[in-house]
Image 1: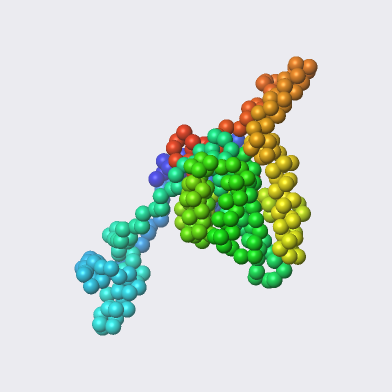
Image 2: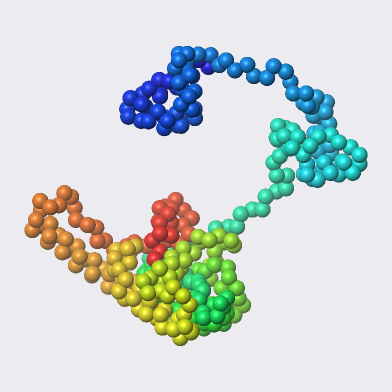
Length: 351
């Protein structure tokens, strides 16, 4: 309509007057520069396009269109696609329309929706909240390259959700639920875990859901928790930890010489990660300090340093000092609105 074109010209003039390029303004409105120039010459003008003067010669009549619908929805063909219907009709010496025409008519009649009930989505894992160490662990397995092309070493690593401390790891030549069961037994002994106090979250891999592993968890009183099938971000903390490991300076660009070399490298990484790495998501203290509760004193001393610096040179501070409050609880797979914000950062804050 002419009013719409005049309005478009006004918006273009306003944008160009504010410093925008004509081409960029036209792109936002979905028109070309030549179209705007033509409209401007005619002061808006009416739509002079005449459109088709006659109907297409190959247009189906209403009766033919209804026949296509009747065939497509008949008991014989209602569960078949046009790609199956058209050849079957041809075998019966019948031609009504092409596959494309069948699809077009079915779309126009709003008959292209999926007819079978959709598979219900997998239920989201229950929300896990850690307010202290040794409450929630997550674990996973990653590959480490071996000297033999196509063969790998398997690194199993358990991390505490609250403190981000690596509480246990092992490198093996094969992926086995027996290895995982032995590792969780050692972790529970080392950390002094009491039955019923720890939940262990993992994905749905064979070692995670194997009978030996599940029986061991039941014996130790460790509650298992699993990600949804084929969902990649239900276990973000372990995934992010592996990314930190493989992007650590010094991680070999080629394969490890042997399994002992792989174990030595992982041991050095865990020592650095637990005791020297200042983790951004726990107020830049080490996972070991957070795990042992030393982070409270460390952060209190930092706050005192900042307060003293502000008192000495108040003109350098426009507001309050940096917030050195210890990190709060950690939520895995949040399921309520109260914990939604915490969940939004769980992937990027994991490592």
